[in-house]
Image (cartoon, rainbow, N blue to C red; front, side, top):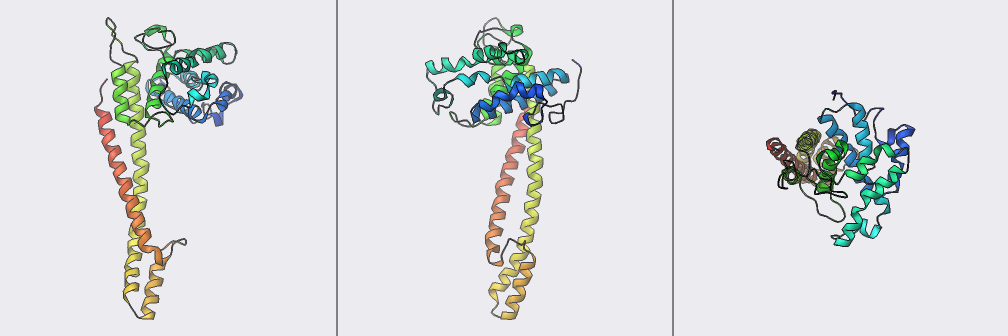
Length: 303
């Protein structure tokens, strides 16, 4: 397909706060979903959009695919809250009910002329290329490409997100899970559960996010450094103020320290503020170091 640069945040995007009436109708049911499912749907749509960009798909298909992703879990409207919001592992019976959200969502779309074009995302997003998925166990070309993309975005978001019924899993571990899912496990087949090319595109999405986060956090780290320098200067005067017994000198050092402070800061709290800033700096620096490490690991991943 023709390569186009698709800006997810421009006037033609699929973000719910900036939609024309046609797309507003298609996505309005998201407001009825529970907060976890709604947030998940929005995140999957965002990842799907960016996967389409990195797969160099044209703008029209990207918009269509992103819309499919927004409503892929529409069928969960009719899954009992006791199952949908359960904090522990589902039983086999509960999981069987949960899986019906695919066919329920598809039926909802097929009964509505405006939703019908986007039904593929609801029905096929849990299908696997090797036939081990649900609800119908179809394989490879029987699964629409938009659903193959949504499957990768959905799985990545579901694993990494800290949801009410599971603990958080790290980015690298999640990507390795998807790499494993792209490898053949069914005898006679050359494909795994998900498409390798889509997983590779996901690497770029995650790497871009990681590098962007490093950039933003580094800017804030620079700000913290400047704040620490300012408070260290104030602390010099604070120490002198505390050591002198001369009232005039004490007041001089107080005013000098105060000159270094912001309007919401007091001289008496200089040591506390300085220690808080240093702690914030070290905490954020450690996180940036972790992000740099993750970025290096992502660049080494192969699928």
